[in-house]
Amino acid sequence: MSRLVMEAKDTGISHQCLIKFQFIYNNLKSAERKAADFCLKNPEVITNSTIGEAAAQIGCSEATLVRLARHLGYNGYPELRENILLKECDDVTAFVNVSASDSVYSIASNVFNSCILYLQDSLQAIDEECLESAADLLMKANRFLFVATGDAHFAAASGAQKFTRLGFPTCSSSDFDSQLLALSQMDENDVVICISHSGRTRNVCSLAKFAHEKGVKVISITNFPVSPLAKSSDIILLTASFAYDMMDEIIAKRVPALCILDVLYIFLLVKRQDYDRQALERTKEYLLFNKS
Image 1 (spheres, rainbow, N blue to C red):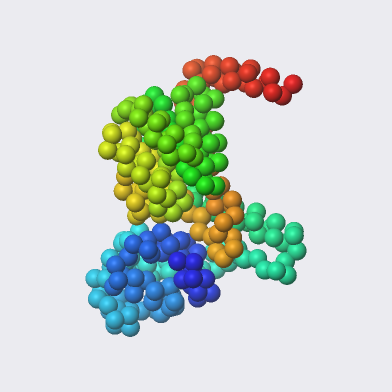
Image 2: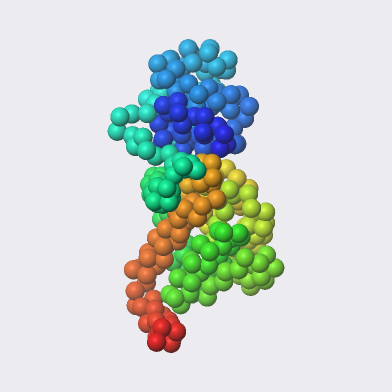
C-alpha cells in the first residue's frame, strides 16, 4: 500500500479521500481495486467525468464504481467525484517526508508534524457511536485485559496503568501465555482491549478470537476496519496513522491509540467520580513513596 500512496500523493488527490482509500484498499475485489487504482492515479479525470464516462475509461461497470464509492463511505459516485480532488482549503503540507540532507531540527519538525497529522486524521476517522458504545461497555465491566505486542505494547501498558489507578482489576502483558492465563479468568462481564495497527498481528488476533468465543467483549483499536482482528471484535475504534517511507516505524503512529485510551480513561474518571477519586487518592499516596 505504501508504494500506491507515494504515487498517489502527487496526483492532486485530496488527503481525506486518500485516507479513505487506505482504509479499504487491501480488501477490495479485483474489479474494485482496478477502479481504485485509476481513481488514485487520475483524480482529475474522475472529477470531470460522469459515472458512465469514468467506467468506460477504467474498463469496469458503473455498478463497480458505485460499490467503490460506498466502500469509501460516500453515498455514491457523485459524492466521490466531488471530494476526490485536492481543494484550496486542504492542508497541502499533510504528507511527511525526510531526506538525508535534512537538519536535525527539520527531522524534529517532520516527526512532530506527523503526530499532528495522525491525530487530526484519527479524530475524523472515529465513529462517534462506536466510541459511545465502548465507553458504555467499560462503565459496566468488572475487569480489563489490554493486549498488544511489539512497540504497541507500551500503549497497552499505559492504558492498563491508568485503569489500575481507577481501582479496576487490570492486566497487561506482551507475553501470549500470560495473556491467555488472564483471559481464562474472565467472563462476559469483562472486556479485552486489543491494539494492533495492522489488525493482523497473529497473537492479538488469536486472543481476540478466543475472547469472542468465550463471550468476553472485545474492543479493538486498529487502523484497518476490515481485518482479522476486526472480525473478532464487538467494537472497533479506528485510528488513521498512515505513514510513508521511513516514517512507517516511528512511534508517532501509536499516538492516536494512546489518545483513544486517554479518552476512555477520562470518561470513566468523570462519570464514576466518587469511586474513582477514592482509588486515585490511594494510588497517589503509594506512588509518592517513589517520588520522595
